[in-house]
Length: 637
Image 1 (tube, rainbow, N blue to C red):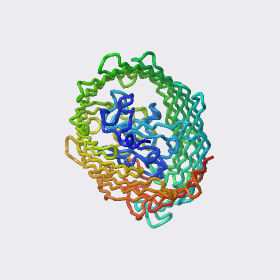
Image 2: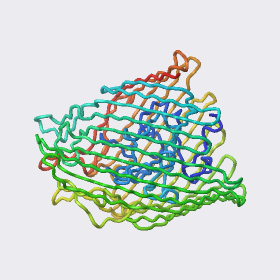
Image 3: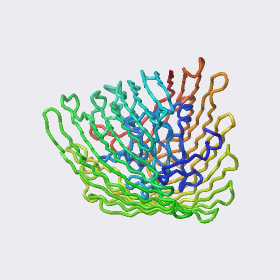
């Protein structure tokens, strides 16, 4: 990629049309395929850790994304919208945006990831609450051949992948990819479960993780068809939801499948058409063990199926305007949840609530002379279950000089309670709350971007989020059962700073710092899992003439509160990756050391992290891995 494009790429997520980062109505962050390769990122969660303003928590089952001091423990990523090539990936039972090993597309197939902080409801609707993550996949032309990768890592981890890509002289482009991963995981110690007898708080062999993935993409002209399938099985070592600690049968299974067909065509010199159809399915199975030494197990099952269509046009017929008008319709044909004991078969929950969603939206990017751009957007959503809502967005951009741009942003967003929050109840751990309300947010942001040369960029963002009626897990002290409730209004404010520098040889230095806080609007209390300080620094070099390169990364996360008001200490992590092509481009070797200094730290636990003891023993924090290594070899032919 030319040097002049590295720091001012065209992005499409903020407005669904290509825009320079400096002209996008947001503080967009981009992680490229080269970043992924140099730093050895293995999952979407790994690479999101490097994005300014984001902190990721891992509870030994799923990874949760917090943005700009907002990240309630156990919220299942319901307030961040995850897209694959612009299409919604969040399922429609839990609203969960997958970012860990359950994410169905291998990171080696990612061309870039665009993160747009703030509300995106004016363009994308529900779930685009705190931000939008768009995973844009590669084309076959990125390979023009076959690539096979094999690797090994700590804790018995093994992985392999195979990718084929080609682009014909007639423009036909094909990409096929598959990947496989298996690890037995580490043995974990939980001091809260250490009673001095039995397992003594150690979960032996319960942190295993296995996945299989398939991906295909075919494009010709403006027509693109793609499909993905991902299946993950994860052991659950935390005895969550009141289970028996240490039972090896406790596990979860996530399966994502999707397919899409889209067409882009110029109808005239000033009118472009986009039409898309897509299908998606999500299946979840959780096996829970509540009674000690019981031959029976409890199964939690859910399935969601969605059919969707989108039609939009982009018009440049009016001088100085780029106008987008679009419509979407989604039909959720299945949103089923079941809970049952397996032996003897006893059904505790059997529920299905299909629904329909429709939306229309309009956006105008208007150039007011040479210095001002006014970007306005409005979207109206109609939900057969959650009702109707309208959300605006306004952004005014001022180019003070060719090197300096200022942006002033305002937007709103909403999220209606999902099927899990509305309807889930079981005999053991959950009960219903019929009084749930939709979540709402208003955001204000000021941005300054300084771009003096093609190789250096700096910026600052000052933001305030005002949200109300956030849904969160709570525990009823009368019966120790979980339920969802709306918390009081809250507010997060902060300042983000960033700087990026790229040398002529392609070496890069990136840094960011976040100073932020999130508080309950009524009491002023510090919100859970909300670090007040984040700092990130990354340096990467390309492969030199000798065939060697590498990257080093430092991430600092400040103190946070867990779900019970206790504090978790801040921590800094150093990761190191080395790349080499000792025998030419056909063979590439990669070696990484994560948490190089062996830092001991923990992520926040949530209300569901308790076992079946009397009284329940609740986890105050969930320990993370110490120093780990991995090695990978890639063969190209």
